[in-house]
View 1: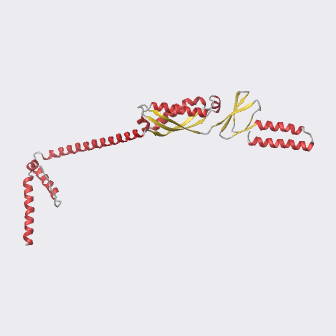
View 2: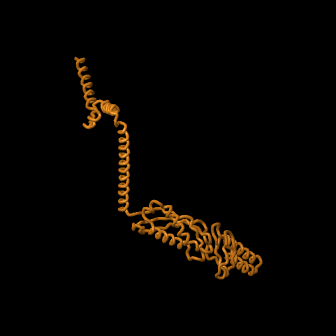
View 3: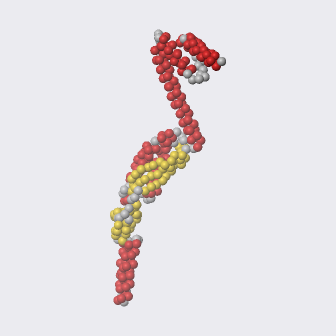
Length: 290
């Protein structure tokens, strides 16, 4: 029953009552009431996104709608109104073990639509409930075949795999899966702490590797630079003087040089001359002040 059919029923019944009152013949109201009741049952209306599944004497007759359509009372019946818009079904898998035996809670959402209303109405009793259970079963199965690290790092791959599995199950019901999206993966708090410590240790390991690599490269550069001073004592002394200058140019600087380096580069003579020059400057300054 719909509003349009009810309005037709009221109009026809009212016409019959008016004719009876005008002519005094009761046959008019009886006939028009029968016609009004027939119209009320026979006229159906499906909305834009709906399909009506019509059976005739218990067998499939047709898919009707959208808009107005007619059935034969008693002989025909509309057993289902199938919504062909995109449907959204949330589903979960609680305390499900991954491939590496980690219990997780996974929340996901399924987007699907009915492309064959006849199959959805006749091949499965409650297609909405069937889709929900099929999605949940597929999710549990995929979690059991996936490592936790893969689940956290590559959700898109799992979404695609889920979509294919669910679509295979629901295809015979006239239902097509548009997409599946995993919204959240919850793991135990103690495991979260352990994973955090593991990530921190991994970052420290990489930092030490980078530092060791840098020191190795620096040592190689020093070794290459040392080859330039082999058999060239003058260049070595110039380099020593430059090192000493860099160390003493800042006021109050203290340079600590190994004894072997002093003997090799002649730093003893250079240091003595520099110290003598510094003391001479201090003595000249004191004489001037006096």
